[in-house]
Amino acid sequence: MADRSRWACRWRGIIGGASHSGNRRFPGGLGRASGGNRRARLLDSDIRNIVCSDPINTWNEMEPMPERRKLIAGNWKMNGLHAAGLELATDLSKRLAAAGTVGFDMLVCPPATLIHPVAQAVAGTPLAVGGQDCHVKPSGAHTGDISAAMLVDAGCAFVIVGHSERRQNHGEDDALVAAKAAAAHAAGLIAIICVGETLEQREAGQALDVVASQVAGSIPSRADAANTVIAYEPVWAIGTGKTATSADVAEVHAHVRATLAGRIGDPDAVRILYGGSVKPSNAAELMAVDHVDGALVGGASLIADDFWGIAETCR
Ligand code: PEP
Image (cartoon, rainbow, N blue to C red; front, side, top):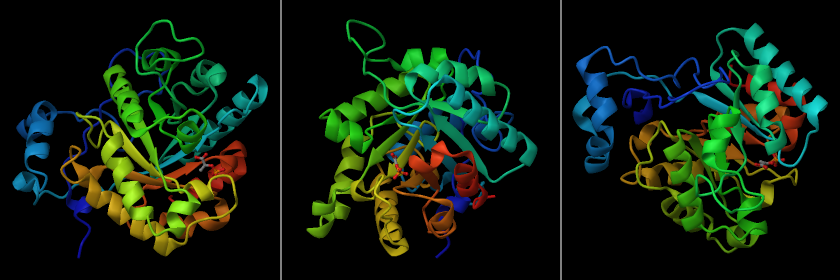
């Protein structure tokens, strides 16, 4: 059966508000829909009501729409000092600019200290910048935290929430992740919501249930395909060199897609990334799996050739 996403709703970008970074608009699908016709205006104003009350969303079913554009996102984690971070980001932005039209969006998520300089260095190029976490509140007495509004102010368009390292090392649960995603949306950021099972859970045959439960519990109200990306990252594959098989990835991603129905606006258009030891050598196979709409990359995103090599498999 044809993947309905290829005929899904008109892509609706949400990037708006003040921009000093120059990277808050993206080519090929992430800019705000021009709204030149009645249907686009209707979608802008009413999409949540329409889609949430009618997940099947037959009203524009016959209109051919763009495929989900792949997103290649780099999570630098707690890596990178000023000079090396700028060199990496600048290198990637130059490659992107030289490549011209490509079939993917590219994002780097540096540590908080580098967000603003990196955003300034890549301003005006298609390379997007994101944060690795945000607080649920816009400001206040939260020592060491960073708010979604601050990320926007520093030049971010995205933020990762619910990464397994946050869930495990900082005790973050689904409710907190959903609140962080809601805070991100309120500030105008696209939230990349991470989910994934542990090795014990996979071996106990619970992977699909765990992931579905995390997806259901971590998506805030008012989430839609334009402001939310899901990243499936099996915990046992992160930073270990172990990668899930294509069959396992296909099974989980299809299950995530099914779980999104009725829980998020325009579920067929939501991008679902795979993360977990993605490298140039395994990216082509993983990116070809149904419902894999890009990659969230840790270690390999710190090496320009490797990160670019992963992205090139989506060209
Ligand atoms: C990650 O941290 O999200 C990740 C997928 O890391 P790695 O690519 O190193 O496994």
